[in-house]
Image (cartoon, rainbow, N blue to C red):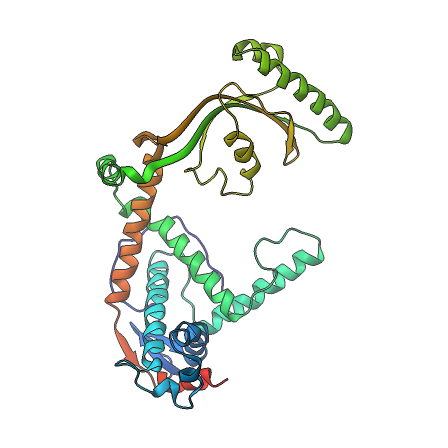
Length: 342
């Protein structure tokens, strides 16, 4: 069983199990809209969230024999953990049911999800043996694969649902910007003329370094970019507006060095040639702003995406809130006590 992303979208609906038949109650802790939650899945989340409960109490309280069933400030630690688990299960199963309805994935059980994990690990092991690049973890255990699966499934469902269901207008974006205008400010902004000179060998590297040095000197003596472009026709120049608000500058390892260099430039200054990601780079600052503000057109697309994602989040939350919960044959309390005793 694998998740298959299909370019289809479905409206937000509430309820309706993805399972065709009810699993044996003797193997089930809960049913969420008729979909069975097995002991293994419930125990996995109990183990994951137990520390979030214990960290709220003193060491002496946690080490007491009856800690989990002792009422403290009006509730037991066990009931807190049970509530956390249920909230997470309802959210995950809301994502699952919406994704199945939208044909983003086939229906699946927790056991099938773990079989999928084994297949994923085998594939990654083969990639390592063949010296291929492996993105993310080289292997998954039950817990981190469960998180990985639902995180990816949520993203795939949102990408499927948003185009036909999250109707965000320019007016919506403008209203949001006007209400949060102070959030779109930055401390430092620079406008630069930027050039990259890539190389594929050591001999080319030396050639590019010499060309970059000549370019740097030309940029220092002339403000006429047309003249510079004519003198170096083999180089492609970009005019970039960079600032410390933009997450791609300074917060991403890919662009960190570029921002480090650019942010130190005053207007008219030129960097010495430097190397970054297999290229020799040069830039000249043609403008610098302190305490600036991004205009609406600069951030409209990211505001639109944020509002679309918020609409999708609301759909998931409403689906989870309306989910019918039915007890199975295994008590949640017994699974929690068994898990926290290990």
